[in-house]
Image 1: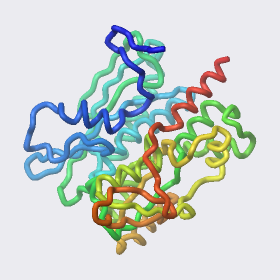
Image 2 (image 1 turned 90 degrees about the vertical axis):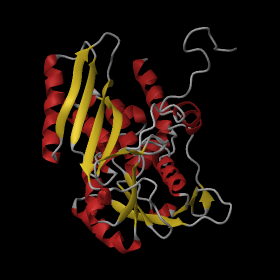
Image 3 (image 1 turned 135 degrees about the horizontal axis):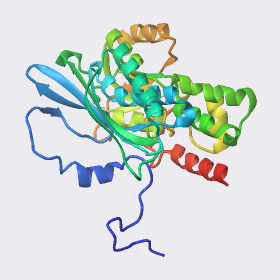
Image 4 (image 1 turned 90 degrees about the horizontal axis):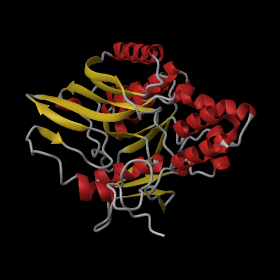
Length: 355
């Protein structure tokens, strides 16, 4: 039976999450407003940020939705949401410096609750040297948790600081921080408890993953230790998605060793119970970092001194003639996931707990 209608949303409903590359290339990329010479890097599928050239300065810019789940505790939810927004500029190697936030608050959110969120955002921005430049705050009927607005972040720096997302080169080593599916497992286990299929100390360890879902300082630490040639945060599509997006940008092959990838026992247990692939599940807080071989030890040391788990998981290889960019794991192809499985797991758990 067709679900087509005559309404504005007629047609088959696409899956939750970011639009796919096919739709982006067909409907978005050709329609980007005026062509301006100061846009050095414009919207590109799988790329975290854009770049403007203002005078002789590079301005990295990114926009992301703002998600607040009160069940996480408002302060923790606010820090988590802010880090997700800031990370897309931090991976450019230029420190975030300015923030604009648009809040479309649900009517049920009290002034006291919003004040807690805002004061947490202020404190974190102050610590990172980020100024709030402008914004919009209002309540609207129809708005609901967790999606309560969006933020735009800018970082102003020198062009020699800029780490391009497509900059990985043959011979570079590939580092991974924190590990796959940490965000997905931390969120799902915190929101739904033992409904995720584990209990006791395993559940506690899974919930503790949420404390490591922060990567802005890791990205800036790695960039300073360098030389880093490319960085990408592991969000929708998980590790498999991030690796494929970087490989396509670099027009290279990424050769990964499965045994080198750090994965927490609690993450494995929850993913097995929920029947989701940890390599395909979102893991905001994890970074894939391409590093010149001479800089690997310095980057690893700098991250470990922050208490961050980091591992050398593979190498960037030149493509054979006529070959397409790709990712292999122990020699076998690794495709970009069509859908992030954490979305479906969230929907299933929500339905179960509502019954």
